[in-house]
Length: 191
Image 1 (spheres, rainbow, N blue to C red):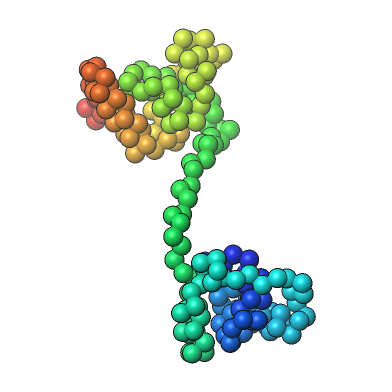
Image 2 (image 1 turned 120 degrees about the vertical axis):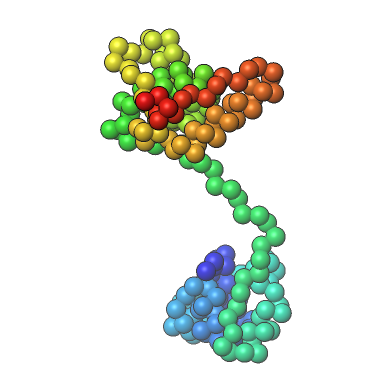
């Protein structure tokens, strides 16, 4: 259950301004009923200014009156008018054991999907454009040992993410009027 902002200050306001039971306040604020009773007795939360949940849109007066009329009723937070923020995708972490596989995956993507931009490869594998350029130009410090290997098999990205990036790149090429390269043969067809 989602808790109100500043639960102790909200509990102080609810104790002072409403006829709700300690259990109702404790349930709404995510506290123990004894802690709410201690706040009411003045043993806890001394000096905390009450936080009005009605003025801040977390509760409605109708909800408070409904809960005051029925001691078994539980308060519910009012739905927020603000949309929840979308979580930004964090940078991709690659374990140390798989970092040496990254140049192999870059070489595979450059050879198999030439329509992918450097930014797409970088986002897909969590690498830098500089590393992609070095693998492409064969100036990477380990270029003699780079063997193109599928990043999905290596565990550096998912097949869904790879398919989505390739579809994006194909759409971009189609918009620009360039020909879309044919899809590589599947492993079953190559055998």
